[in-house]
Length: 303
Image (tube, rainbow, N blue to C red; front, top):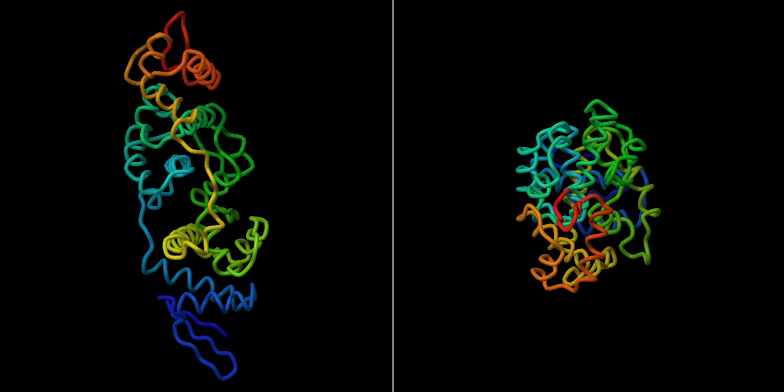
């Protein structure tokens, strides 16, 4: 039998043995040995809530239930650390406070506020989503993950996260911190673990009494695990191609330069960025196809 106080303390009665508040490593061992029994699920939840009550992080997007603001935060948090998102999120929702404002703004204005977050495709996709929400849903974001996934830039994870945080829907999803939590508690001694191994446990342990806070607690516990238990979470790391010298870096340089100029010729751009003309031509073709820029005669500008 396991009981918790409001601060996460627990008493475990196993035969004649009574254990006070468990240390993190002790909790891990007990759960590893017992797997997902009702008792260990309760113990797991208590451990997560205990840490969150004492050390949970606060972010502005956690203080709102506005679907638009939550959508903005989820777009920004894709492949970007929370520390980089905080100031940009505040600036962005101040400059573009709702779907209508974002939809009606110029791409140049949107990209200017976005600069510093990287992955400019996210900003473009978010504005395209805003326009779809305005034209197809009268400015009201759909709540169903299957519908959300049909919007630009929204995949399964983002759709599920938005549904949970904006509409309190009991969706089940995984991201890097959640993956770290469940690997640590349930699969620490195992070999190769896939998300398909973890998803059933996410579903079983979901705390529906406070869904949003539960996911926030998992995020924060996972962030702590990755800081303190790097050898344990090494297998969770995703390899990325080097940024320096990549096409993504060069595309970003082109966008940043165009944001400071109303228009420019291909020759001027090639000279300024010290790139080969053929390379610039290919990058410009990509940016044009994706809707970032337009080329009128010899002049290139943000669309």
